[in-house]
Amino acid sequence: MIKRRFSVKEWEYVVNICGSDLHAYLTQIPKFPTLTEANELSGETLPITLGHEFSGTIVDIGEGVDSKFQVGQSVIIEPMISCHKPECHCCSNDLSNVCPLTNGIGIGGWGGGLSEYIAVEARLVHVLPKGISRAMIEPLAVAWHAVKRSGFKPGQSVLIVGAGPIGLFLLKVLR
Image (cartoon, rainbow, N blue to C red):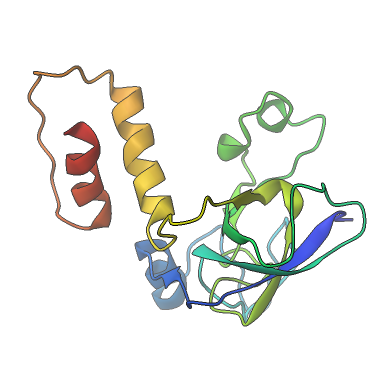
């Protein structure tokens, strides 16, 4: 049972269409639910509302949710869902991104950024400071993480293949 959820409504309709969304729509991928086979984490079958790169505005807060959240706040959603079972080595060691069951909100279920409203676990919600553009937070986070993990040092050369959002953010982060 999922506890401590609250609702988020998108106001500037800030949803990115990612390659993963296109793959989920155009082809059958093993981790994605089908019309007859439910996703292991969400228990949902198709149809599922897509959109895992999204942000919104809090419109309602469930009981027991941390007081750092307030109605009207701009937030970004961490779209990764995993099993969080104590016996899962990955989840119990703060490595839920490599949990064998990992999937995404808006891919494996739970609604998605193209929904009018969505209820999300509080642990997946991050408050954005005023003035921060919400549209590209997830691709920026991917680029930032990649550069951080790469061990890149100023003065080194690098090859960026692709000029999509992540490629352009890689360039920006490296600079």
